[in-house]
Amino acid sequence: MGGAGLVVAEMTCPSADARITPGCPGLWNEAQRDGWKRIVDFVHGTTDAKIALQLGHAGPKGSTRVPWEGEDQPLESGNWPLLSASPQQYRTASATGRAR
Image (cartoon, rainbow, N blue to C red; front, side):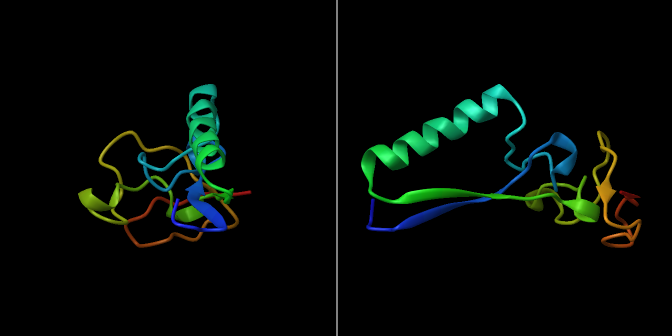
């Protein structure tokens, strides 16, 4: 509402296994779609700004804790399988992804 011409939302994941952390925003189910629609409708309804979403995939950096619980640290439980361009780890404590 301050005169921006473009608003860009942070990296948003297309699937649950594309997330960096469990706290990452997503767009793979109807509830998330509806939540993003509310945001887009608000931006379009109150400003002339355009809005974009940065679509991303965590690759080997995924399945880690949210930053306030230990940035780039592996989850203690509830990990998901990683898909990435190579089996190279992001950090030594990171899970090893399956190359695709």
